[in-house]
Amino acid sequence: MFDFALTYGMTPEQYWNCDPEMYYNYKNAYENRRKLKEQDIWSQAAYFKCAIEGSVQAVSGITDFKKHKFTEFPKCPHIEEKDSIKELTEQQLENERLKTYAFFKSFAKRR
Image: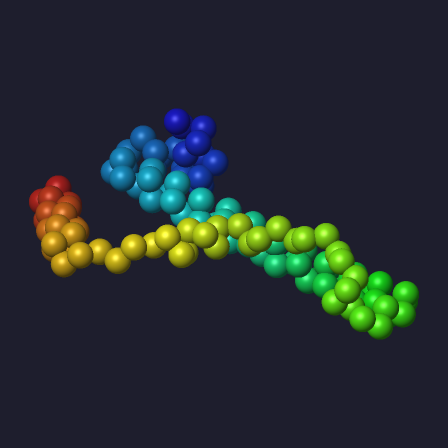
């Protein structure tokens, strides 16, 4: 697990001496950065595809562009995740608030 911590951006001192929850924070941040990078690469590829299709249309003199079929471009990664986000009920929100309060209270006692 230590090698993953270094991959996520933690220093050895942070891994060995800090709160274990910090490992998961670094892991989540690393995964979010990776997803954003994948989306950026996808956007750039989609832009290039549109540019190439436009060039093909201009060079070949295709007049009815909609009849000419190009290959289907894959959907953007991680878009499905945004659609599946569910709303929390009031009870779940209250439970999350209580967990957060308990965490910070125990954190303040340690300092």
